[in-house]
Amino acid sequence: MSRSRPLLLSLRRIRAIFRRHAYLVFASWPRLLELVYWPAVQMTLWGYLTLFLQQESSLVARASGLFLSAVLLWDTLFRGQLGVAICFLEEMYARHLAHLFVSPLRPFELLIAVFAISLVRVLIGVGGAALLAVPLFGFVLPQALGWALVPFFAVLVMFGWAIGLIIVGLVLRLGLAAESLAWGAIFFLQPISGVYYPIQTLPSFVQPLAWCLPSAAIFEGMRTVLVQGRFDPQLFLWAIAMLALWLVGGALTFLALFRSARRLGLLMQVGE
Image (cartoon, rainbow, N blue to C red; front, top):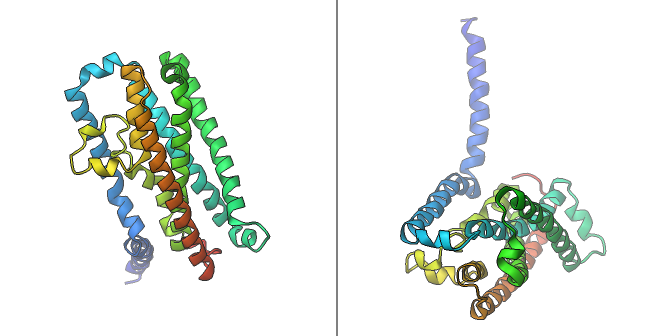
């Protein structure tokens, strides 16, 4: 009996640790969603890309830098959103949010500063990758897209900010159990944004949803520039209209969730 006792105690400790983490996973819908999320997104994204290449393989040969342009512009959107989310997560880790908002600092002042540092992050990250593409692949992004790069870049960065505001609001309200949204929520939009393939590749019932995203119009516009050599003003105006809706919606969502978190005393939370 004495020899079996250490083993029994060890099993109990293992079970206790297992039960703790099992409770964390199954008591949190964001964590459960994350388990299914990445495989589904990857399968969907590369499945549509495969269909596109099967139907239009000659397009890749005609449009030099098609995928490199798509990757760099997508990273602009991703890093714009992530830059906003990371700033708030760092404040939550350091327990600074409550201190910030008992000061005279106003929410819109904090947001302006966060947007500014997010833009810096994007310029450093995407700029570095674009410079690396020159010696590795002989690809110059400004040369490929011309002046259209500037409006494309601006719309994608601001769309990232709108998504970032929604995610930050959810993290403030739900706690750090929803932290994974900061890293993964944006990729839900990637398969329906037409990053690597035209929107027409998507099922017909998904296409109206895709056109609600400013990113869909931007990536369609990118392919128009690269393949046809022209800037489509209609696509850009549609992207601006959708961007305005997303910015207003993101700001209102953030303010509503922020006020709710503040009222419930959740700005100091760092746990689940």
